[in-house]
Length: 507
Image (cartoon, rainbow, N blue to C red; front, top):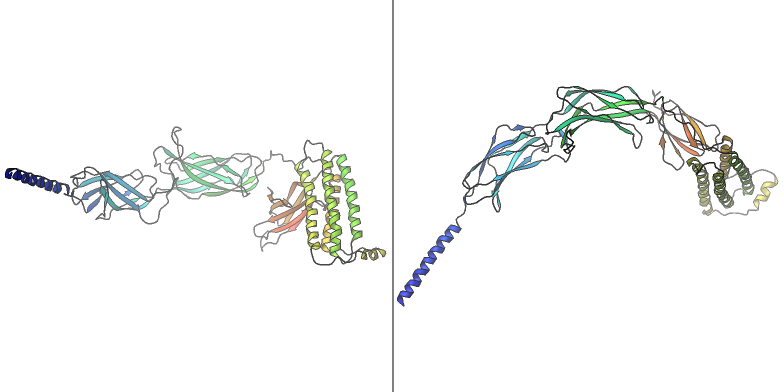
């Protein structure tokens, strides 16, 4: 029994000793570096595709990690320097990673410098190492490198032709001081550009692209404007793009060199002598339609006189109620006349000017009805309508208030519009616009529509205007903008002459 007890005690002592040894082996920490010395190797002023080489030396060689990684982190310092256009935006942070080896304290690394990294000074900010988890240590040295600015393409002269005839190719000569550097493999820099006018939205035409070649300083781009573009001053701008020549590869490159120096130019576009522009639209009023319009014009003349005869002196509200009923009848007659006019047309479908002609008449009536409704809704009493009996005994017509005059004028305007269209044999006209001084931009719009810009400056003629109320806007540098209107339905003189209010010395 004593022998058995001694054996058990001995076994326990052996097991305890083994557990103690195992525990000591398990709890033994690996050799862990606490500092790292970083040294730059080689150049520290670099261009893309030139790597930054550096050496990392731990104070203690790591042990017992059985793998893992070392990571070095770099950060761009200061404001970014834009030396070329990067399609996805320039990077301001980067890192380099390598494998961690037990027993190795010195590591040599290379950080690739690519086109996405912003030019300027970069600094190593931290180092981490480990396997299942990363331990961070601060470098003991101030390690920096500089990514140099990519030299831009500097344009020293642009020579466009002073005048360009629309429809004819034209050259734009360009002189560069320093050709673009070809940095990204497989990419070639191209000189490109465009021209555009001042309309909204603008007309734009691209210039031909031409490859920038080493040691070549003169280039000639070509532009071509179609024959019917707006004439006048066009603005041009040059740019540099970078593309791959190989069709099998992605066409666009990651960057394009920055362009510097002169980039903008101006050309004056003249009308093509071969361009034939119609001066009228074939919106013919045939004899049957003319007879219809003249008959309706006679009815409108009688209606306007009848309404005048019913006016009550000094009683705008009573007059407004009478005129409201009369104008509503006239408005209904417009739709009836329009339907008959279109039935008598020789066209398969009514043209836009015909629709605009009748719509403008309706718009005049609706404006009058709106004014009349305001008067009727007021608190002023109607008064006895029998006053009109005394009004006509002496044959003196009543003095009409402003709203009544506006309402009766809308009927008279409808009448004159029908007569003008019947006499002219069409529903369009041309308006000559003259200004003093000349050279004003002419904008025009049918009442209720957006403005259009004439492709010629004053003095000039606007063709193919529908009989209607047109708003005219005149703009010239050094002069106040002038806004006026011209009603083609009641003004037989199709001519507008305006003097602009300009600063002294403007001619």
